[in-house]
Length: 281
Image 1 (cartoon, one colour):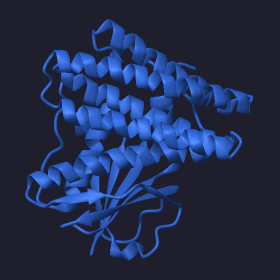
Image 2 (cartoon, rainbow, N blue to C red):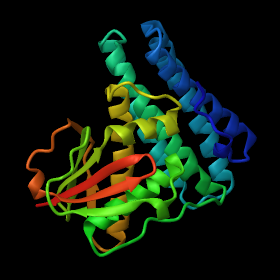
Image 3 (cartoon, rainbow, N blue to C red):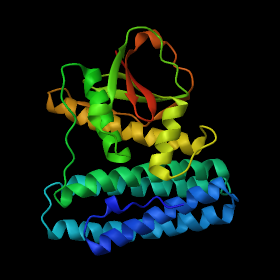
Image 4 (cartoon, rainbow, N blue to C red):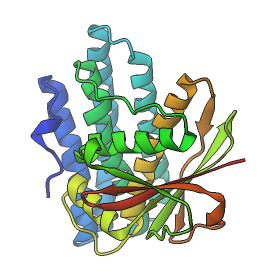
């Protein structure tokens, strides 16, 4: 199984080789989880990951500083966030004696974070900036468009081929929902719903494997996609004059309580449908 694609190449040899190694680590972890499920491999993976992430981030930050990248501080912040996540999973794996469920959560988060960071954030410092999300009047539109932009970066979707459908009634029945709280001037709840077909297609595109079920690995990856989409949406909203922030994602499962209270838009894509929902207090 290989998650690395030549389209991820930046043209900076040292950084590209390190990225390739990180993708290989994530791919081997997913392969082990879907295969023999050896806890010793999980232990070796997290130990190597702690060392390699620190080494890669040091080298990349030195390069970014050498070219005078304007968004250097934000880039470093994102590096610190992944470092924190790796340390969190290291502690959880040790505490659980390297159990399968925790390894799945690590693999999902790591794979989604890597793909988005390389194809979106790292491309910026070599001058390949993705198109920003459109800015509309509706708060829901900000989050729907930021989600489409993330899917374009991570899964190569053509934004013009994603059809938005406003849902007036409680017709959305997805396989899993991810909730993200909104705090600040904008308070409420943002929920991303994923159909089984969409989740399967996204995993196949991103991670080169077809899941049999929506398990911890898939949910962790979907939570990270939701987290990135929500974060990008709040940035666009802040630029319009409304300051807000997000809480860590929470996996709700297949049920969305008080569904009637949410404003919803369905995103129909080439790999299936997903729903973006919002409730503002």
